[in-house]
Each structure stands twice: as structure tokens, then as C-alpha cells.
Image (cartoon, rainbow, N blue to C red; front, side):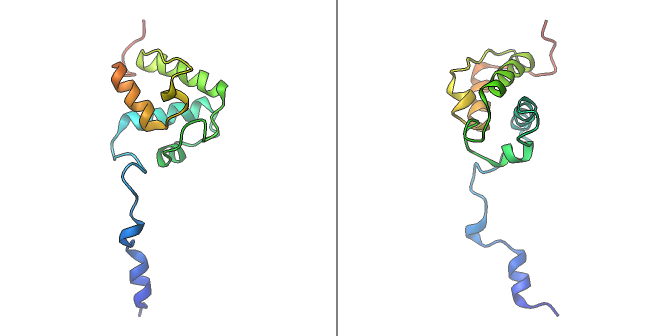
Length: 115
């Protein structure tokens, strides 16, 4: 026989639910791909799950200037957009800000050829 506390522990309390924006909506392929690119740029120092769960800026997460340069190159290669290293979307915002910037720039799908 289970104690009632076990049943209560299985269901999260209303205040324990993740706030909107804490994690990407299921199926957001752009955020998932950006997390992969950031992880690659940091040589795996940051994992995709950690990046997707965070709303902190990339620099606050410890992304170095070299990794930001690699990321900018990867974004240009994959999405056909140029993002200046001084662009706040690259260093001062999290994945959500970077995704929004790519959407505004009209980045193409990574599946299209670059040349």
C-alpha cells in the first residue's frame, strides 16, 4: 500500500510547472538545430539539452569568443546569413533571441546548397 505522499510526489505542484520560455516548444526544429550548432562550436562543452533548457545568454553559459566565431561561421554555412560578432543575438541573448534574429534575417533551410 502506497502512502498518499507518494501519489502527491508523482504530480507536480502548480507552482512547480516550468514557466513558458524555460524550454522550447516540442518540435521547434530551429531551436534544436541552433543548440546543436552551439554545442558543436563549443566542442561539446555545452550539451544541447543544457542549451535548450536555459534562457541565459550564450556568453553567460560560458561560450567563448572563439566558439562564437565558429558559431557565426556555422550559421552562415547552414542558413546563409551573416551575423556580425557584435550582434547581441549572437552573444548577449539566448537561443530564443538567436532564433528570432535568424527568422528576421530570413535564413534559408540548412538543407539547401550554399553555392
